[in-house]
Structure formats: C-alpha cells, structure tokens
Image: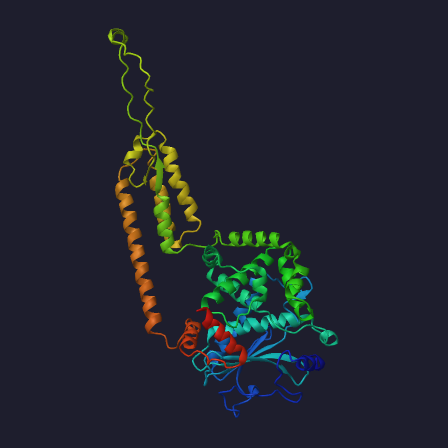
Amino acid sequence: MRTLVILIACLGLLPITASAQEPAEEPMESVPPSRARPRDVPRTFSTESQFTVYGANGDLRVEAFRLAESTRKTLLATLAQKTRLGKVNVDKGRIPIVLELDDRFTTGRDIVKGSIRLMPDDSINFHLQIAAGGGLNVPVVTEELVRWLLVDLMMRRVRAENLANAGELHLPDWLHQGILELMSYQNRGRPSEVFASVFRLGKTLTIQEILNADTSGMDGVSTTIYRVSCSALLLMLLDQPNGAEKLIACISDLPANQGPISRHLEHYFPILSGSENQLEKWWSLSLATIAQPTRMELMTMQETESALTEALQVTYQPPAPPAEKAPSKLLNILKKKPEPTAETPDAPPPPAEPIKASIEDFAPLLKQKDIHAITQQALLALTKLSLRAHPFYRGILEEYQKEIAKIPQRKTSGLTGAFADLSKRRAKMMEDARAVEDYLDWHEATQRESFSDSFRQYLQTAEQLEHPPASRRDPISRYLDAIEKEYK
C-alpha cells in the first residue's frame, strides 16, 4: 500500500499530507497549527461505516456523520448499485473517509479541502478538512463527499504494479456534475421538470460537447444546462442493458484509460460508437423521452388546479334544430311549380360548432342523447389526473367523480350545490397554499443567518464586468486592436 501511495504522489495525481511515522496535521489556512490533533478530539464513527468524523461539537459531528451516510446511500441508489455488481464490490474494501470539523472558522466557498493521507499502518484514507464555523454548508460538503466517493470507486482496481502505466487519476467533470444533478432529481422526485425546460429551449449539449466542456468559465445558466445535459447522458447510459454494471466498470477503469474519454465510453457502451447522424438521432429521442413526466412525479398544487379545471371541460355537439313539417300532398298538387332556372340549389347549412363547457354547468347536457359519452370524457380525464395529482386533491377528485356519475342517471337533485361546495374548497386550498408560500419566501429572505451561494456566479460576473482586465500591450494584442478599430 505504501508503494501505491508513493507512486500516486510521484505522478502528481493527488496530494499527500502525511508521513510514515504519524498522521500529519497540516492546518487549514485560517486554522492555527497549534490546534489539537484528530486523535485528541472526540469522534463519531461506526464499525460498519466508511466515515469517521472528528470535531469538538457533538451535534455538528452527528450532523456531518448522518450527511455523509445519506450522501453515500443516495449515490449508490442513483447508480442503481446493489451489494455486488459485476466485478465491483461496493461494500467491501472501501477507502476510509475522515471528516475533520472545525467550528471556529469558515472560509467562504473554499470550505472543504480534501487530500489522500498515508497512515502509520501503510494504509491510506481520504481526509476532508471542513471549516464549519457557521454550521455545515450542506451543498458544498455534499459535493465534496460525492467527489471522493467517486474517487474511491475509481481506485478499486488501481494497483502499484500497473499504476505507472495508468492514465491520470482525474475525476471527469461530466461524471461528477451529472451524478450530483441525478441525486438532486432523486431527492426532489421530479427528474423531468428541468429536462423539459432545457429541452424546450433547445439548449442541450451534444455528447462530444459534454465530454470536452471546460466548466471553469461557465456562468449560472451555462452551468445548469451543462449539469442537466450530463445527467441526461448518465440516465441514458444507465438505461442500457446492464447499464449499472457497465457504468461502474467504466468508472473503475478510468485510471487505466490513456485515450480519449469518448473511446473509453464506447468500449462499455457500443451504442455511442455509431455514426454521427445515428448518434444525434438517438440523443435527441432520448432527451425527448426523459423530458416527459412519469406517473411517479406528482404535480404541484397550482399544476393540479389548472389540470383539474381542464379535466372538467367537456365537448359536445349542440342539439339539432327541429325539422320542418312536410306539407300535405294536396297542397303540393295545388302549389304552382316554379319555373326552372340555371341557379344552383342552396347548399346545406354548415354543421354547428361543437360546444366546450364545464361539466359543472350540466343542465344543457340533460337534453343530449349521448350524455353517457359526454360525462365519460370528464370521468376519464379525472382518473388520469388522479395518478399525478397533488395528494391534497385526491379527496376532491373522488367527490367530483362521484357527483359526475349522477348526471347520466338524471339524479341531479342537490348537484349544483355539491359542485359549488367543491369549488369553494378548491379556492380555500389555493389561498392557504399561497399564504404558506408567501411565509416561506419571507422567512428565507429575512430570517437566514448566513448567505447562500445562489447568486455567487452572478456577483462574480458583475464584479468582472466592473473591473475588466488591463489591456495587453504585446505586439499581437496591439495588432488585433488596430484591426478591430479598422473594421468598426
């Protein structure tokens, strides 16, 4: 194991901050070097867990430990892993991950620093130093935990005798960002919402653009589109036959890859090796498929209310006007026949436009011969809506179905009042939902104890625009500036 870590360090793949005699205690930039060593600090761990958390604050340690465990479980669920997939064992031989918390300092965005450390018994572990002075920054810590869990997966097949011939131990951005986005979708339960928004804009990236993208200069919108595209690619790979096993093997063999990442993926997923035209068609069709909501994705209250209003609409033909009474045969005999003319006979009147109205206005429907078919439109739409409707609306949908079923039977006594009561309940539910949403918005805007990173990239861009870099004065820059002035 010592040889493995030394070779990693020599190749410059990952930093090592430990010696063979005892664990090094390299402090964070804002932490004084005189602080206690991890072995002198209380810890939270489990013999069955990959994680050990050091820190003086017991509540913070427990929170970090639970976050680490939940992150690992969500990652494994996202990759559809079981106890053992193919040749990759995900529950044995894991590299320990140590989280060292310091609740006295915070370093803004650079709140987590990770490294590989060599232990006295020649084993290695991943060491994450976390500045938690303002509490745990859950999104940032989760992002780093996922990074090192994926690195752990990458190092499963790395051995000392073949490490010198392996490629650079580098976690691809598309893999890291795509996994994070998939985990976010799994927590929210609505994977198609963002996909549909990006797909409608037509801003999705091609597969080659995803694999070769440079994320360093991306703004907020570009980052969102990039992460959505990465997660879509991972979803498509997982949906292939034995996709989970192939993806795990692909990740584990990344250190041995010396060629382009696209060739490495094609080795495990032959569908990516088709012609450019075939690949583009497959990619576009796959994106359109995952943009469609599934039955497992529930609607919001606003979406359910709009869909319910539409489901209550029915379409039917107006009743035909009564036919004119045919004259008697005697009148036909006495009636003077008109002179023949070359004029064309009158065309039949055009059919009446169909009527679309809410089934709550059921009085005109009672005159329709096809009243059963008309009410069946609303009942079918309500049944379909109930599959994805917000849970608060399930009782209302059942009552609508019960009342509408009375219309074909002409049992309409009290039906108007029942529909009016249901409309009042819907209005009251929406009013309460808006009040709750307003309160949560107020609480987020006025009661937060720390700033979020939601507008970090926007503020950085604005700062760069206010303070542009100084003009370069080298010969090439001066020549380009002169050419630009000529064409202005």
